[in-house]
Image (cartoon, rainbow, N blue to C red; front, side, top):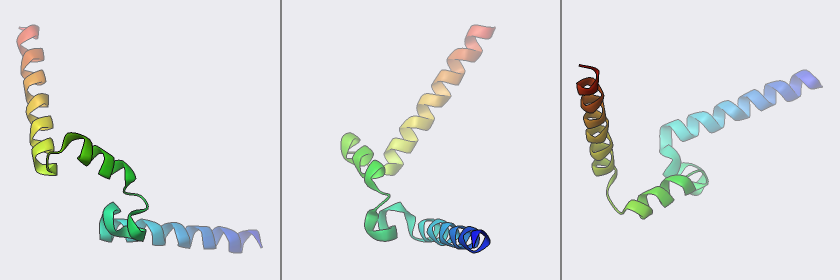
Length: 71
């Protein structure tokens, strides 16, 4: 009985993972796992590409400041 339950748990876990991977968090299971991403997007109001561009730019600036401090 324990082996069957373990196999069933693995199959359900794989199904959930594949569904989220293929459909994304916003579409999978009616957006059940999308609450965090929706709140983040609404808080900043900027599209994802702008937020990513800003985060990468900030990381580059921080790295440049660190490397200048080491010299």
